[in-house]
Image 1 (spheres, rainbow, N blue to C red):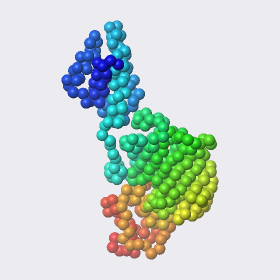
Image 2: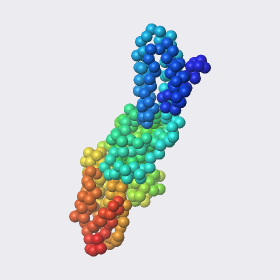
Image 3: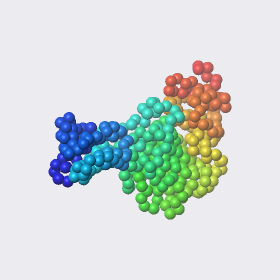
Image 4: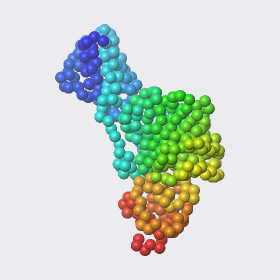
Length: 371
């Protein structure tokens, strides 16, 4: 472009991102309306939308130009199209790279949205964050919307306490991320493997690509574990505050490795990894429960159950009196169950009682008459 065209392309950028001054707006409008019948209109909401789509903006701006029909416009069509299209592309870049970064506090989101929601925070390879309020994030469909680009750049999705979120990865793998969990992966899976890093809980339905194994890396409270699959359905619970990592296979074969140790899991098998030791057993669970974030307990003591409650309902815990005997619980609870109802179920099944004070649950024995 010539120097004047570059100048007006820059003004078009300012127009779209709403940084143009009244004087510059008039100058740009005067330039564009020379031999034109109608003024250029670039809707302000394009720049105001924090999740604007590059292609949609580009198409709408060009469509607005094409609608001007006067024959005398033709001599200005090419430079105007070039100027505005470049301006739009620049404006998208400016929007994504020059706007002040937004950062979301997971604790604050948990307080604001509460229990049973499906929100998550997406962090892209440049550190920008976006709040995901839809129940599903489809990587392939949404990459352009969030300007994620391509390549080896790592992205991360985190859920606050009380929220779950479904993710569809680039390869078609579906992941149901549990509360207070995070997952890192590359925008595109480079090399010969599909690598994921997980903290917390997730249920996976892995897309079948035998030539490119799917690998989940877990580092939880100094416990390192690798899970390798080709195409399968499995669940992982690996929270830093929990004493063990649990993996359950619903379909296919999964290999778990830690250091020199490894073990294979098949359908309806569950492995617990604790203190460097694998312990396997057969457990039948309906995968539909896991997909919808059901809370599954398998001979878990009250402390483990209460840790789950703390994550799912965003509450603090206080053990007023440490129970002399640790009762163990087995069962499945819907995550849609209210906190009061959940606590009542435990009270009926055990000798524990609970007092709910604001966002704090006090645990005590049935014979403690102070509550």
